[in-house]
Image (cartoon, rainbow, N blue to C red):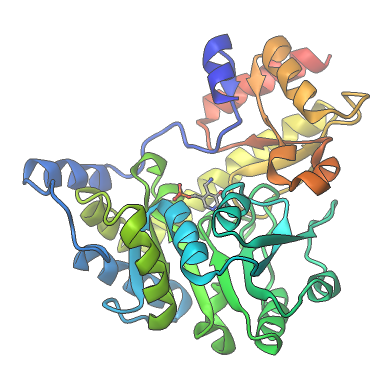
Length: 370
Ligand code: PMP
């Protein structure tokens, strides 16, 4: 869809990347690091300065302490942390229970490990997890519960109570939790993300994953991390060793600096994005879409059935690109093949774009839907 947006000169509200730079001071540290010659392999588990900053960040925002030498691993984006955790922990035939729709790399990595994805549907309009459904699919082959909150593509944020229920299930069945928290700082309406590892019973069985990409608008740097108890982080590291070995030396001190920036930075980021969410949701509603208002992330999922009578999200996205000059993503991409019909009529818009870009997209959508 991004290629189509370029080809047509359409406004790209498809792929989730911001169209403005992150903090100048963070960018400058990367430039200075290159100029200072920080251009060779950094240590395998990441540079000390970044591992220390990640540990401080987890303590400051979530009150969870990690040993930065044994319990923190720097990865090539959250994507490599996910891949490393899955490849490092699973044997062929093992099962991973995860919510669907889902970030598309989960299924692919589970397949690479020869393991099996066992999806549990998050159903509209609330997309809240159904714990009975979750528990009902657990078997003795289940090894991992993979969760993602704040959730892509729906923008659902797990409550503390839901997290506690998930942890209880993990404890009962002795499962490892992989918790993808990459949108941790993009939370709206005065709510806050809580890390799964804040729950004491979760700390020793959870790999918490995040990334600098979303928080510092540096998605192209691919600096991510995994934190968790030493034995689980060692498993992720053993896979990472042969995936990328190391990554992104000059970006590591820059992201370290970002993680230590004052609270105001993180608050402003969420507030700005909340304004963009409101702007986009208003126009979606005026244009006749039904949508789920996201509590977090930078995505909004809309139901297109009132505008596309056959309910085909792929066809709708192609029409929208050609006729309105706005690109969205068909949500069918976030479902397993067996459940694709649940996402067929849904599309995702990203609002991590400048105000003027969303205003222009809004004008195009209004004119198109007239
Ligand atoms: N997890 C989720 C839920 C995501 O949406 C994304 C990015 N789209 C990632 C992980 C990947 O993050 P990174 O770019 O740091 O690899």
